[in-house]
Amino acid sequence: MFAIPGKQAVSLTPAAAAEVARLMDQQNAQGLRIGVKKGGCAGMEYTMDYVAELDPMDEIVEQDGARVAIAPMAQMFLFGTEIDYETSLLESGFKFRNPNVVDACGCGESIKFRETDAAEG
Image (cartoon, rainbow, N blue to C red; front, side):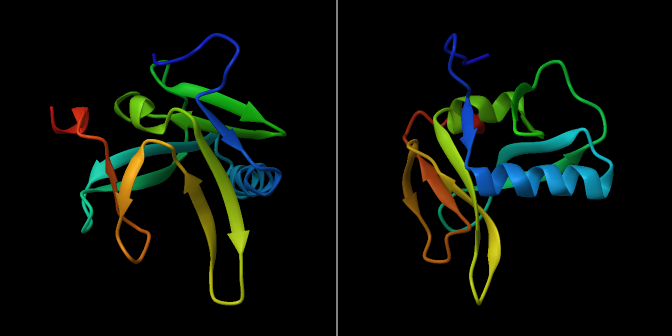
């Protein structure tokens, strides 16, 4: 939908690709669907769900055995995002390095995009 020929909508670090592939295998899923929804103190939150069946409207990114499906309404917000998977002593999880984010809350769970906020429509 918002694709540039020859460029994937999002990229996965090797750690993120390995974790997505592991989760797909563990849950017998076709992939992970990434989206955004209203919520949190900054206005929007990322969502991740297992995909039982791929939707032809999703943007599909495949890398090193991992498959990520980007929900149609999220494509414009996620274009250019690098997804990483980080593990520390206190927590582990997916981290989104998104050039479209202009602000985030202190806990890092909620984000704000530029004023062209089409998610409200």
